[in-house]
Image 1 (cartoon, chains in turn brown, green):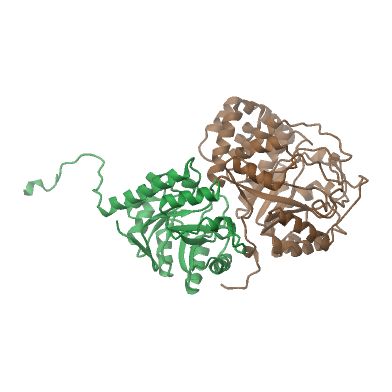
Image 2 (image 1 turned 135 degrees about the vertical axis):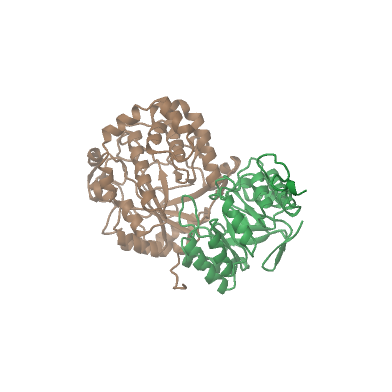
Length: 377
Length: 255
């Protein structure tokens, strides 16, 4: 069975209704439970009823995370390769109908950016593009991964969804993980947010993690864009998707991000606002539901929020990010995908992490693990 | 207290330790020094072998410590053999903690791939200490393949759940001709002492020390627990009974 079939068994409205009708006793059952929490428990933990239990959730989340991941935080940085995009998405600064200067980095420019990023200390990098298959298709990505491979231990991508065989090819070149966010699991409204381009195909996008699992990628990142639709319902579907993937692709690691819509050029403000308190609740709920999923926090969030939330379940953070292609060295002034909220340098972030009693981890993978090996066995 | 010999090395301390999860490398160094540990395992993926000034390795450069590189992160025998060769070259030791856990959820070791890799690595001249499930037959097979010790788990890595596999560990210890190191799940000094009292040759502890509020004190606590457990084992514990019993109810009539 593929995921969409499983997904179709759920009704958005019923799930929403069920989350909002959870009571404090449902929350207490979820919190006091020994062993694995179910998706019903997760609903209780993200419900309005759980907001009174935030401190208890935070302590539990903190303890579980520390036992599993230790007192460490993985550092990563995005490298935007291109802002060309054929999609029209209502929330994105790179949207096709947005009249901005477009740029796709050349080899020489990529290496300049890499040199700057390496100076900042990073060893794990996330390559980001829009969706422009003619100029930034699989061939471009293959070339980019080959080019940067010698400089990083761990390479991830956040690009347009690809075919299974294309992912498999990128993996042999050294790709470690792929992040692909559904943005929203609300099928009808998905098309209101994604009006034109390949991304408007809901089914193709929702099956992408399945293709990734089949391709054998080491880690799959899932998530939604918070602000498009009701975050509780969308987060339930994220957890449900994670649960499905973990059981099917049991050798794969998973990560979740929870980006909140940020202001960007030509973008409407979100109709579904999420408060800091609610984001903290969601992060703790994910951790209590799933002890080993990686939880990643970007520079979309403010310094004060980031400083305090990292102890509540987060396992990886970006720092010093630029969300415009060429932002580190080539063209620092060009237009961003979204506005950064925390513009402290990676060194400042690392030192903040230290003051919290944690270690900033720069390297936690080795490219030798992925070098194409001769048949020794 | 008897010393422990594995391959060509003699250890005074029977507490092996891990290096992950500490709040800083400086804290790791202090805690491991205090624990008296002489064998510390390091994940190849965490060290930068091209950097002479690598933060983890720098803090482990004490004569007290022997490095035990591990292959954490690999998913099959082929990857493990390759990683092992890189580790040997980079860290200049042929000792290896073989870890193949393709399941990122519970990090349970793959017995089939582990045995395959162990056979290959022994041929390549490694001193292999495989992390494995508490499976007595598998442990014998690993012994026959030439491993220097076996490292069966007490419970899943990082779970702090203690010796959930106790009944199987007892069989492994009884049958083994090579040292048995109980690895994984040891969450408290009492668990470590229990393993040593049972006759384990050593234990490996990481999470419980690294994640403690005071890792240095916890390192010392484990050192003492391991010593106490070993001494008790060597001193021969009395058998345990659930109820008080007359000394010889069936044969008293012969007196």
